[in-house]
Amino acid sequence: MSSINSCPDVLPVIPMNSLSGVYARFQADLNAAAARVIASGWTILGPEVDAFEEAWAAHVGSGHCIGVASGSDALQLALRALEVGSGDEVLTVANAGGYSTQAILAVGARPVFVDIHPHSLLLDETAIGGAISPRTRALIVTHLYGRMAPMPAILATCRAAGIPVIEDAAQAHGASWEGRQAGAWGELGCFSFYPTKNLGALGDGGAVCCSDAGLAARLRQLRQYGWQPKYQVQIPGGMNSRLDEIQAAFLRVLLPALPELNAARQQVAAQYSAVLGALPGGALPPRPTEAVDVAHLFVLRHARRDALRAALLARGIQTDIHYPLPDHLQPGFIARLAALGEPPMAPAGALPASEAACAEVFSLPCHPSLDAGQVQRVCDALREVW
Image (cartoon, rainbow, N blue to C red):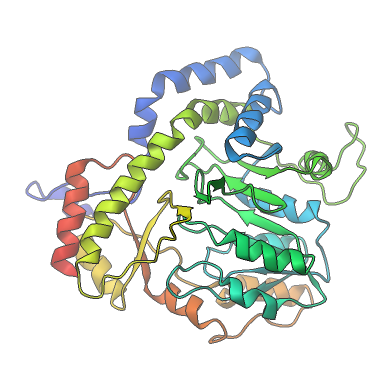
């Protein structure tokens, strides 16, 4: 990459992500938000968090929003709110970066992996029934790359079995199915506001949404040590996981622009899709008519992934892999499960669609800061190297 940048006759690198353009556009409002928080002297769980929680709950279409320190904490707190723990099993997928698996293991439970659709790369709802056991306490469904999993079918199976559903909507801010937003379908919806998300803070942040007042009250206790009242720990499993006032203030600035920023991502994705649709072997995941894809990532797959990525980088185009190793083959997860005294996870070959996807997927730059010339460069390069 340094050699590309050092050659005056080579175009600048197109980055996988770029936040500077978004920040520059909102700089005055972000500066004002920071100044407002500093002047208030209130930095934790104050009026900015309250206002953002109300706004985000309304956007999602959920009764309650509880701001927390990160998306990973949101998943863990959701499990704790459902009292999932040692001896329990939680269904999830293995191709979504490990965040749900990390949370499941953190509460002492066992992840049980459901394979994915080979085309959509999302949870295969027809495989849920075969994974349920007497120990199953919940299912975490990940809305991956900006695409929603088929929630009506997933909920029908889980509710018939009495299993609560947690949505991992960290990559799906504004995505919807049949007009209903990601995070508003299951018992709990978890969000990350990591800076590169469709709605990102200027640091870490997260939230859990729900419509059950009892779960909301429990989550508010759990995010602050299990206190009720202050300094009195009434419930187990509490954490120090609070959304900062300054991040909530930044999120309040950026939230009104989310539809516009999503539309910019969708426009980039549409241009890539048009090119790939005309290339041999360039089939893309199907987009159900019921769903709105907010293009958090533009992910495609190719049997010669590494060669294509190298060829694109030689043309100044960064790419990434989301994600290269499925959870059931991650050494750290295997070791953690052994430490919990649980049998090993699924062996290699047990999740053929997930494993094949992890061997072939890669991501193109897809973010609101891309200009028309950069998108055209990526499209031209794809035609050259495919």
